[in-house]
Length: 302
Image (spheres, one colour):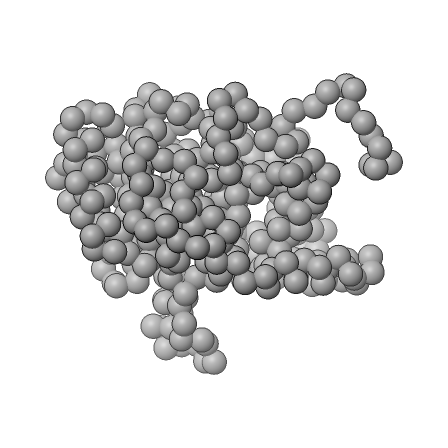
């Protein structure tokens, strides 16, 4: 990965020095080996801090939202899942393509810094010593799907089939069993909103969960409000989730959020597909559930 880091530095330095971009989003090393965090470089000198290593896991497309109201041109590095997030933002009219210079990196799989922190703390018992990111075992698109320059060798999809089996297990439950499963699962939620903050598809300017007048969803940490929060958010993700897995990775209480997202992605594909979110960008194209016609058939939904 050192070779890729060097190439990214060269590209970022060139783009910033030539004025092709005003800011370049990448990663830099923190104080510990497992701490690699996002960097916004604004000069060729800043670009020398850039690294790309096994802990460059953050989805940088989500950080683009901090720049959506300006006119700056932005360069950034994307892995396969990150690149799907860019298509998500373009389709949502959060950005225009001409503002972005995209450096794609074929991703061999990342390690999870949160796992590494737990391992290094020495405070937890019976914890696995493998800090490979769980989400990378369910990555169907490790290679960027949109880019201006591409780095690295093409990678094969990493799909274990475990998540598909889990979705089928939920589908085979009775309604009462499913309700019990989700009731227990969401009872752990502490309503920290980390899942929302890490999600590139959560790009509403005012989130329904922040509205106070009217207050659509209560803020108490109880069964009813927790279920409502996750139900509403899940349906907002239907047809929009790019399967980057960041929501589940950053959840402090390990709620299997991608199990829900995967179920909805499967349903959207069956009802409106074939369709997978963020796979192909078409100018003025709209994803599933983003357009409608008065002549749309209601067959199968009544």
